[in-house]
Length: 327
Length: 108
Image (cartoon, rainbow over all chains, first blue to last red; front, side):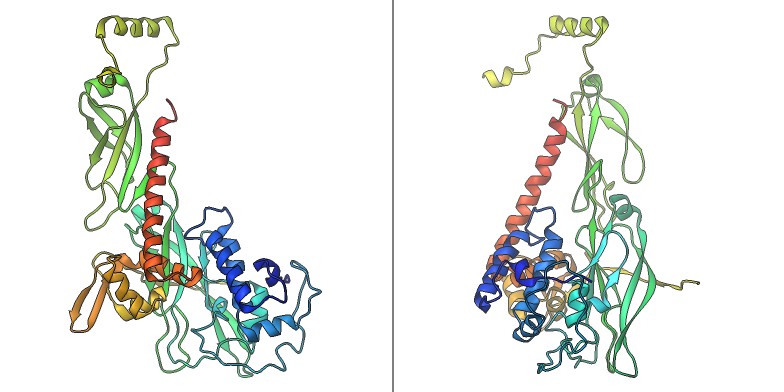
């Protein structure tokens, strides 16, 4: 695994005070917070910062980290020293208060998902799992876990399934912790929307005493679609039409998430006008609608015949598209 | 080696679900006072199912989780996070409209 220079990540000196570390973290968090930031690598950068702050804000963890020495550089190959953690007095904070050990019970499902607060192997080797810095597990019931799951718009419409690999810590007779993974398939019902939570009862942290296991929550993220834009359960499609279809009206075949349907364009339709297909958005109670926004596309005047037709229109139609602006 | 796959029943928290305030606090990592203040600010609706047993619609969860993250990670208070949430949503709506108009204008 690679060494992480937490001071460098937060841009502070090794001698920085707790206030300076907090200020540096807040300043960077404002810039890279995934809910706010438009930076391309915001999520990865923010996780790095969270991990660095988690260590440097905690006097015990910071002291232990500092003990590794200042010679290490980010990216350098690293293994914890054999006597790692000795000589420290631990506060034994409850598991819920710190982030240590969360990685051990996260969920992974290949591309498109991530476990929240998924800290690096470097962090886990120093402060997670069997480390003396891992939170003391004083509670009987397991904690809930959260992960994000990416689905396409079509999958959201039809429903889909995902195979998740869930990792769980198991305490061995000698007291050390070993990770065990098991694979589950989750059916994702049709009609899930952006940000919606899917609860998998009992799939979070296992109970350590007589309580029940925590739940696993999957937060749905719908990937952008090439054709449709989504707003709540409604979808909008930009649909090209010929000038005569808009002017004279007619029946056209329009793609929807559920397959093509026939739609009537009223005569006198204009470019930008929206037509509604009720109930053709994402399923739900009530289902969303599909909006078809017309885009009138002019045929190119690239042949003598086409030019003649445009000339004829100019001569006979007496049409001024800017008439209303002149008033 | 044969890989054993368990099939899980998933429950989508949707329009018809209401969630107790204590569970909301856990899911969004907010304290009770923050949830009550957010309800008072109109960030989400709430109902009193029984005396003292407040519930919040599950559809409010995504917004409340953003509020929780903003408070925790940026150190803003409840009203600051609620304001940021509204501004972020407005920004996203405007960006959506802009993208749509850009698509329309692409060929003109």
